[in-house]
Amino acid sequence: MANTYRTARSKVVEALVTKLKGINGEHPFNSNIFENCHSGIVFLDEIKEYPKLCVVAGDESRQYQPGGFKWRFLTLDVRVYVENQEDPQEVLALLMEDIERVVDDNDMLIYDDTVSPALTTTSLTVSSMSTDEGVLSPLGIGEINLQCRY
Image 1 (cartoon, rainbow, N blue to C red):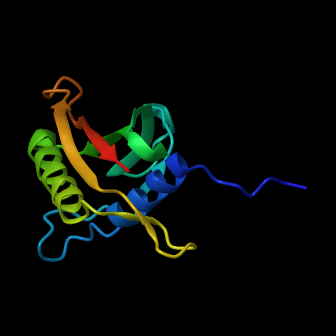
Image 2: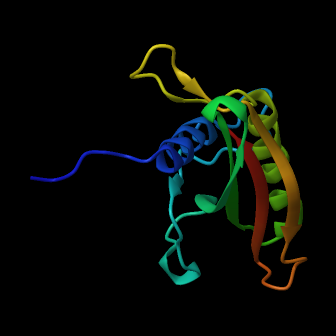
Image 3: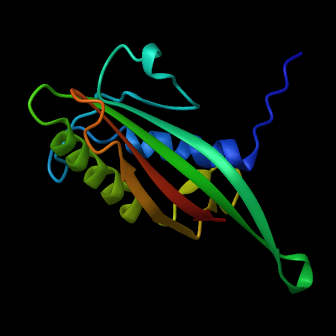
């Protein structure tokens, strides 16, 4: 019998993936990812369609408070892959803006609604953003590091 238990880490990642799939090119978004977003790492040679977003859970730390309460701090990496013959860095920059908009709009992200009250993050913020700076043209690769507190 398969274990259907999922960790809070994986639930946070899947909730963010679901939100990012909403980047559809309609106002207020600049880009359309055609729901091409998933959790886990993908290698460049495995990508069949661009743009591609991958959300990966990184390190997690705890901060223990009185009364047995603890904050969890989870690092999330969003890897962004685009392809454009004219200006892949501009396409990448626009998509990264859209991702930042999704993160800003979902500071309190519901990651488990099977319990009452629903479990949410209390903070989801961008820590850093970086790109390949055009080295891989016509591809563009970016990474957004997020800090999640829950």
